[in-house]
Amino acid sequence: MNTTQSATNKSTADSQTTAEALRDELAAANSHVENPEAQQHVDRAIELLNDLPPTPLVECPGCGVVGLPERIAVHDCL
Ligand SMILES: [Zn+2]
Image: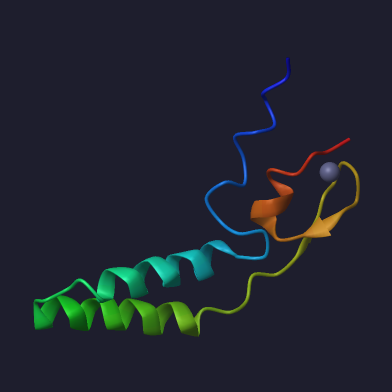
């Protein structure tokens, strides 16, 4: 029985980048923050995330497939 392929890609949706997932997490946290000063920091963090440039795509040196670096790192390479 082969179980080695089941551990990856569980934490984010297929098309979601780490930055997008992080933004979602911060937005979720923001709805629970009651300290106004802490909320400013969460708001600022979300702003900074929105200012990040989009992640450039990379090409796998092994098989040539093109995609986000975090997806290339875990893809099923030949
Ligand atoms: Zn590859």
